[in-house]
Length: 186
Image 1 (tube, one colour):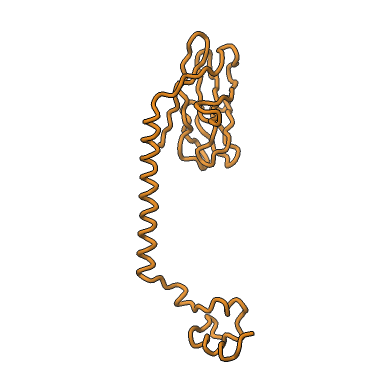
Image 2 (spheres, helix red, strand yellow):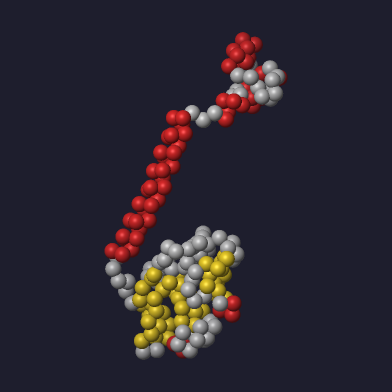
């Protein structure tokens, strides 16, 4: 129970925005007795701290991108991996495969007699699985209605801003091989 003396001391420190005494204010007002001018006031020191921390966060993000690109270049050539035989995939059909690691799902789409494209299956927005739609010449991300161009992997609509990672393909002796992954940031 709050005594009358405590209420009188609190009223000297702050005045409610509607001007009523603290005893007539809602219960939450006793726990948060800050008046409006103080509520909107940001000290120069607090603002400077915020700006410095925000700048460090942005700088760290840029540094992390540089480190990731450096590590990607340093990894060297990825191993060549057989995906499928030419006669296993009909024109307009797709095949899901893992490359370069077992958890990296990719899509191979046959567009013509000797024309194939392959991209990573994770949407660059929130990593949902994209679905190929060869008749509409796009990959569709059903999570947020994003779409990517079937030939280039570049975003066509929706929230994704970065293109899908492209898997480099090579055909040898009627077999389709994945040889590398090209990750583009633009």
